[in-house]
Length: 205
Image (cartoon, rainbow, N blue to C red; front, side, top):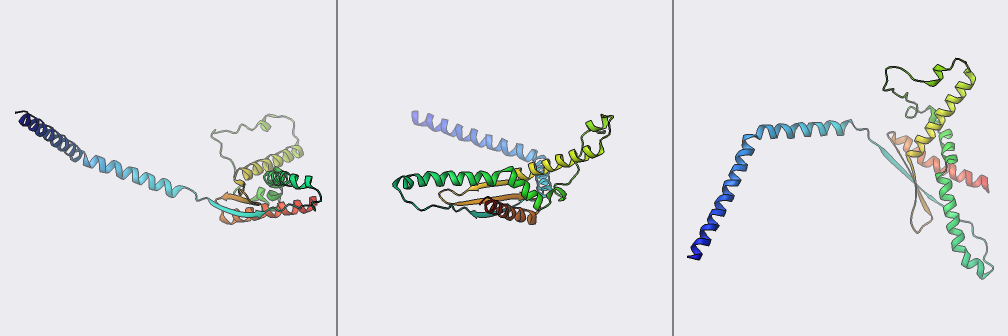
């Protein structure tokens, strides 16, 4: 008797599952055109968004930093050699990331006049709120000089934001990477940073 009750309960559960699946299937079929239309719209919007994105190219140059080691003449210098090398590599790494080196590359490649960095900014307002327009005193020379300095500073800031300097662990190698929509510019910048560092190092010596 107990076996028959258990079998009957099991049959009812199976029937409930079948009924639930049929209800789900009927619901899907009832709204199939809406589901298909929604999937089509999402796919279309995703495709348009992907094709509207500007491709970004990443160029990487690898630089070898060699330290000049003096002749070891004492046991103290042997123990201090590793620390001195570490400090030297850290210093060179900071030089590669410095704003001074970035300004040299910007000047060498004349990026201030490059179309990528020379695009006018679009204002969200229908009128211009330039504070210089409200100053009654006209200083054309000073205003032009200030504008050029501001523009150069903005270009250097944008340049440094797209530049990455990464040391390779347990080696004397440093990777110089630059990202840009212009693939030729990306390659030129990566090489120019390495060349500017080598020239600065030679000038310091």
